Image (cartoon, rainbow, N blue to C red):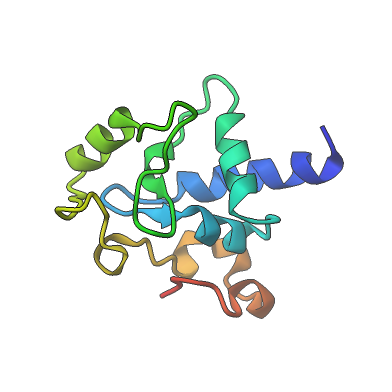
Amino acid sequence: MSTQVEGVYPRIYDCIARIPAGKVATYGQIAKLVDASGPRQVGYALSSTPPGLDLPWHRVINAKGEISPRADGDPDSEQHRRLLAEGVMPNQHGRINLEQYRWLPCYDDFPDEAGDEAFWFNQPGVG
């Protein structure tokens, strides 16, 4: 594993752990927050989550507001079930309204970075 991956995966996991119940974040939003190379790196990190790490992985969706298909091409029904249990309701087309359910991180969510203007500059969905 490269040094970059060793450095970014823990940041990805830490960020995902902060997403509150009833909210979602996109792969791209997480990538931007942790300075990952892009949304795919977030997906790779999730697929490589160490055993025993309790992450709310189901709260990460794609930029269209959809549950990304798995290797077999089907959306993850477990992810769908967990989101519904938290009150995240997709529309009739199966999309989650990002205006309604997107996590808007605030300074309290990232206390170590609260004073870091570079961290907050141009963050998507930061409120």
